[in-house]
Length: 516
Image (cartoon, rainbow, N blue to C red; front, side, top):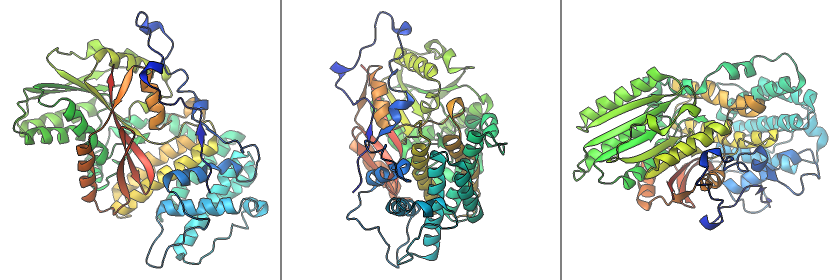
C-alpha cells in the first residue's frame, strides 16, 4: 500500500571497501565525510515525485506510516468505543485522509471547506484533532508549493482552533502552525513576529545547562525525554541505562577509569554509573575521573561536577573531575585532557555530535582529536530523526511525527498541567520546531539525522560498531516496565545499536564504537 523511500546515502560497507585515511597526512586531507553531510544526501528520492498532485509533496507521510507501523489492508483504522487514538495514531489517520482526498483540490485549497472526517467510531475530540491536523497538513502543503496566501489563511484557521493548553494535538498544531507562519513571513519578506530573531538570540545549549531541581523531577517521570534533547532534546533514562551499561562492560574491573564527556549537562548518567560500580563488590576501583568538555556555561558545568563529587563521596568512590572549556570546538585538542597511561579511557557523547553538523569543519576536527585519544569505547546517543532535508515539507512531516510522539509521551507520563511539561513544550520544543520548520541556511541549527548516516560517517574515520549486549537490552526493558506508559515506550535492536521509540516512532539511538 505504501511505497518505500530511497535515500542517496552510502550503504554500510565492509571495512575493505571503506576509504582509508591518509596515514601520512591526516590533518591536511579533505573531510572523510565530504559526501555524507551534504543536504542532498538526506533527501528521499521518489520516482513519482514529478507526477504532482496537491499532496505529492507530502507523500513522505505514506512512507513514515509504513516505517513506523505496517498497516494491513486498505481501510483506515477506527478504534473501538473502549479505545482512544494516541497522538501518533491521529497523525497517521489525518495523513491517510489527506492521501485519500488528494484529488479534492478545491476542498484542500479552501479553508472554509475542510476535508470531511467520518465520525463513525471516533470521539468528538478525536474527530476535532484529525480535522485540525488536516488543516495543518494543508497549510504545509500550500507553503511547500509557495502558495503563501492560501497557506496563511489555513495557518490562521489553525491558530483559532489550537491552543498551547489543549490536547496534545492542539498543542502540537499550535507550535507547528506558528512555525509555518514564521516560514511564510521569511519567504515573503513580511515583517516577522520576531520568531527567527529569537532563534538567533536564544542560546539553546545554554538553556539545556540551566535545568534546575524542579525540572530534574521531569527526568524521573518521563522515560523518553529529559526536558530537551538536542536537537534539542536531552537523553532518556532508557538511553542512559543502555549507554552506561555498555560503557561499563568495556571498562570492567579497570582500576582507573577516565570518561571524556562531550556535553555533560545534568550528569545524571554518572550517578547511575557510580551506583552500578558501588553495587559490584568485586570492583576494586581506585579512581574515576570525568573530563567535561564545554564551550559555554562553565558555572553550570562546575555545579554539575561538584554535585557528582558529593555523590561519589556518599558512595565511597574515589572521584575527580576536570573541566575543559574552549571558546570553540576547533580549539579542543588531546593535550587538554591530561591522560594517564594507566587509565582506561572512554568517550561519551550525548546528542552533541549532531549539534556540529551545521559546522562540518568543527565536527571533523573533533573526530580527529577523539581518534588520537583512541578510547576503549565511544558511546554515542543521538536523536533518531531526519530533520536535515533541504525540502521544507520533508522536514515538516518528520518533525510532526517526531514531536507528536514527544508530546504524547509527556501527556501519558505527566499530568497536563504539570509545570515541567509546559516548560519543555513552550521553551525547548517550541524553539526546535521553529528552527526545523521556519529557518533555512545558517539559521537552521537543528539538523538531526539517523543512525544509518552516522554509520557511514563513523566508517570514514576507521570506526567499527560494537554490538550492544542482550543484558543491556533486558535491563532497559525492565526499566521501561517501571514506567506508567503501557506498551508505548519500546526499545529494540537495529543492527548493532538500540532504538528507543514511542508508539512506533523512533526517537533515540544508542550505539558503541571502536577505532581500528
